[in-house]
Amino acid sequence: MAEDEVLYELGVDINSDFTFHDGDLKLASYDNNLIQAVANRLNTKLDRLDLFYEDYGSVLTSFFGWKGNDTTIGLIKVELDNTLRNESRLASYTADITYEGDGLLHIRLGLIPNAGVIIDVNLVLNNMGELEVVETEEE
Image 1 (cartoon, one colour):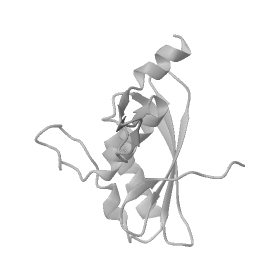
Image 2 (cartoon, helix red, strand yellow):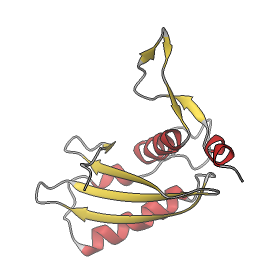
Image 3 (cartoon, rainbow, N blue to C red):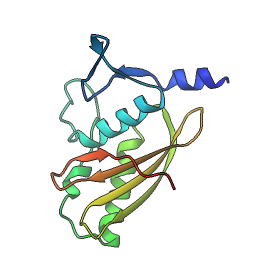
């Protein structure tokens, strides 16, 4: 499968920050669209959209304020499994979950699409109880 076909399978959608480009809504394409879709699914409270989608959303944001111990990290891994298995474009993923000294939950995901290479995503459950995609400095 050609690289263009792999990227195309990841889709295109309206960028969820609703910014404009040339008088039209900006789009999130390919790997950025998959990242946006995963972040949206993890941020949406489970069954909030059950009128339109079955099993859409997660309870991940409810872990805001929990103690950063092995039990909590284990529960978060279970929630990631329960949520991400519903994303049809993912074959698999890897997750590295840590609590930092700032009390924030950091999740580094390696998204593995059905056909393609690993897409790294860094998420933080911030002090507002929202999961956000964050950029990291190049090492």
